Every structure is written in structure tokens, then in C-alpha cells.
Amino acid sequence: ATDEQLDFPILYGSGRDGWVSENPEGPKDQGLAPLFDLVVKHVPAPTVHRGPFRMIGTILEANPFLGRI
Image (tube, rainbow, N blue to C red):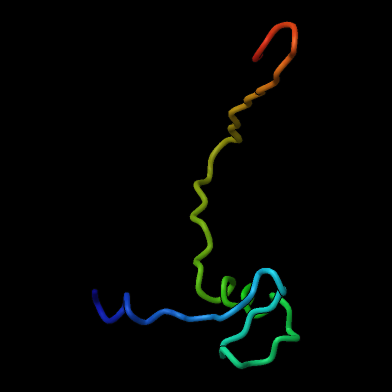
């Protein structure tokens, strides 16, 4: 692995108890805010391709009489 790949943030947390911290013994009263802050800081924004609006519509529905529609 490259040095860039080895340089990543580490968080410790408990999903059951609902806390995240930068230290294993760190404060457990901040909730999930450190996780969200880290995502905003390290995950790049998506690239946007300008153009006309396009959408793929899909409807999956099950009916007991007709089956999958």
C-alpha cells in the first residue's frame, strides 16, 4: 500500500450505545457528530454532469392476485 492509502482517519464507536470518538477511551457524550464531521471532511463531493434532466422510473409492486407487477 502507498503512504497515501495508509493515511486514513480512525474512529472508535458503539452503534448499540450511539457514540463515536477519536479515542477508544474518549468522550462518549458527543453522539455520532464526530462521524458525520469526518465524512464531510474526507469524502469528496460527487461530480455533477450538467445537462437536461433525466430519470429512470421503476415501480415494483406485488399483488396477491396478479403477482409481481
